[in-house]
Amino acid sequence: MSNKKLVQHTSLTKAQLDTVITIAKQAGDAIMQVYSKPDLQIEQKQDDSPVTAADIASHNVIVAELEKHFVDIPVMSEEAADIDWNVRRNWSTYWLIDPLDGTKEFIKRNGEFTVNIALIHNGKAVAGVVYAPVLNKCYSGLLGEGAWLESNAKQQVLDISQQQINDKPIVVGSRSHISPGLAEYVANIGDHQMQSVGSSLKFCLVAEGNADVYPRLGLTSEWDTGAAQAVLESAGGQVLIYPELTPLEYNQKENILNPYFIAASPKWFERT
Ligand SMILES: Nc1ncnc2c1ncn2[C@@H]1O[C@H](COP(=O)(O)O)[C@@H](OP(=O)(O)O)[C@H]1O
Ligand SMILES: [Mg+2]
Image 1 (cartoon, protein in one colour):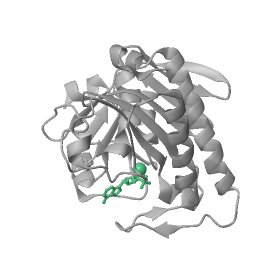
Image 2 (tube, rainbow, N blue to C red; image 1 turned 120 degrees about the vertical axis):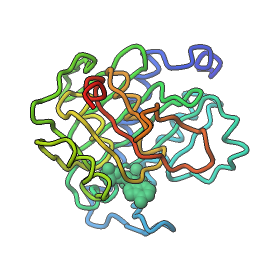
Image 3 (cartoon, helix red, strand yellow; image 1 turned 90 degrees about the horizontal axis):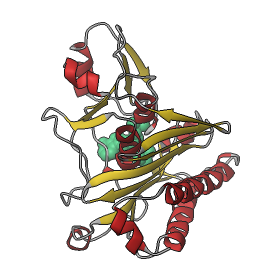
Image 4 (cartoon, rainbow, N blue to C red; image 1 turned 180 degrees about the vertical axis):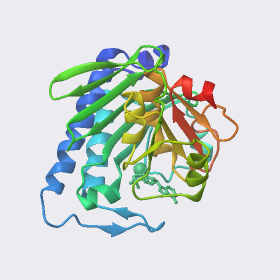
C-alpha cells in the first residue's frame, strides 16, 4: 500500500484502520507474553520512568508492521523519540506511538495499560487505536467518521456528542501521577465522583460515556495522548488546552511535553 493514497485522504480508510487495529493487537500479544513471565525486565530510563521488556517488544512489532503496510510514513515512538526537531517539524503526516502506556500499571499487573497508535496529520490526531489487552477492549476512531469499541467480539459505536453531564459528575484522573492542579480543578466542580485509572484509558472512558471529564493538570508527552484524543474526538468529544481552551495539537514545538488539558464531551465545556 502506498502512502500517496494516505496523504491524499489525509487520514485512513476504514480498511486501513482495521490494519492498524490488527497491528495493535499483535503488539498486545507481545506485551502479554512478557506479562505472563515472572521477570518483567524492568529498567529505569534517563527521566527515571520505568521501561520493561514489554515496552520494547510492543515497539518492535508496531514499527515493523507499520513500515510493512504503510511505506514511507515516518514513525515517532516513545521508545525511539530522539528525532531532530528540524527533521520532525517538516512531517505533515506521521505515526505517533506509545507502545505501552501505563508502564507503572503494567508493573503492578492491574490491567490498566494500553497500546496506542495515532496518525497525525497537520498537527491533528486524525486516527487512533487504543488497545487494552488484559481488559480485552479495543477503541478506535477516525476523525469525522466515527469511533468504535470492540470488546469480546462485540462492536459498539461511540457517540457522546449529545451526552448529558451526570448530576454528580464522574471525574477520571491518573492512578500513579497525581498533581496539585487536579485537586484545585475538582474542588471547583462541586459534588462529584473521582475515579483513578491508569493510562490513556481515561480518555476512552469519557468516549464511552462512562466518565464526564478527564482533567490532566499534570505532565504528559505527545505519545501519551495522540491515539486516545483521536478516539475521543471521533466520538464527538473534545480535548482542549487548559486554561486557554484551545485544541490540543501535535508537532507544533520542539518540546514533546503537552500543556495541561481537559478531555470531555461538548456539554462539559458549555457548562464551565
Ligand atoms: N512528570 C511527567 N513527565 C512526563 N510524562 C509524565 C509525567 N508523569 C507521568 N507522565 C506520563 O503519564 C503516563 C501515564 O499516564 P497516567 O499517569 O495517566 O497513567 C506515562 O506514560 P508511560 O506509562 O507510557 O511512561 C508518562 O509518559
Ligand atoms: Mg505513556
